[in-house]
Image 1 (cartoon, rainbow, N blue to C red):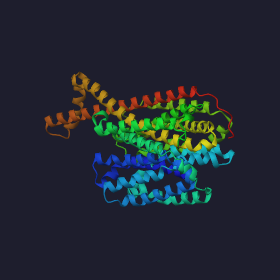
Image 2: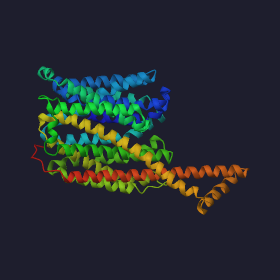
Image 3: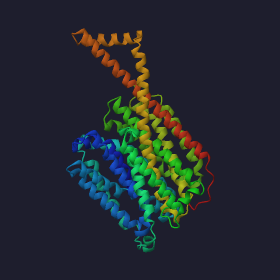
Image 4: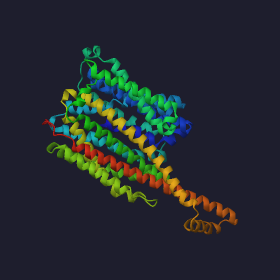
Length: 495
């Protein structure tokens, strides 16, 4: 559980602390943009392979090696002398932490007593969401009270606890040399490199303007070709390392699609609120975190009751209810104005916290119940792929969507300002009158009044774009609700 928490938290805290990291490394905006990309690519490279590596070498060995690698990188990252060394260490840190989530769910399904599996799944789902929403508070607190270095050093206190738990609690398994000899190396290479390139292209696409960047086009085309080669290989080889034929069985394909959709919704709203508070209200990370904490805290209260509920009821209505609550919450948040601050977000965010907890926990439960324990390794890899790509697609879409919608609204509002109507003249007169008490030159007061009006137009355009973002997220939740309606009742499960 600690691994699932830290794996997601590390990426999220790095995103919030990007400005501090760029300043510490003396890196510009474009160079610093690769900081978050490097860590995510590392997680993607190993996330596909780690379940199979766990089957060959034993989950215990793979996790212990991943913990040691992540610990060493977190210890050295704040001491890196330049950006290139920092990016290399981040890539290695992503590889180390990328083993945590796929092997966690596989271990929950295969090793926990039957009566505890539902609670393990509930904690697994809660950990991923909790880490997303406490990251801003942690980064802001470290920046205000200690140092940006604790963005990474914080894990050095937790990783030894995780290492001891894994070393003591997980069984020692013999190396399965038979699986090693029969490993589908080509499929592994296609998947790791292809998905890693796609992730990097998506992460850099908005910054480099997508089709206008040869780097982004090359990453997406190259990654797409390798991903297609991986799919063809796994569907035709007699011994695939990922049994993609599972996607044709029961509800698994629909469930993975819903998971990607919910990762899109979670990170989309996790982008809109911080961006609004920072751009419009000039909040700092610690103040932003006070809003996001209201998504995290309710999950701590309902995680165990929710696990008990899902042991007794079909997860499909719980998933549908969660999707509906998220849609309603996003529609509530789409009414935001330039006057909204922390308290205005609380009703919608509390409702969204409940909806996301219901939906994600039920979703993972339905996935696990749709397979047999022997297939847990494949489901772990598919969960990691769907989780990372859903999050990255959500981030890329929402960043581009907000940028385009802000440009559209800025143009539309600007057309009314350019008309020079009586309302515009009145507003400029009010600004100039207030400034006249402090500025002796009337011409300078008029110029500053025009600047204030331009800032008001920019703020209003941004708020309208954020409202559109919430509306788009609500549509995504309703799409997940429609997909949930297509799910068929699965076979009886032992948990």
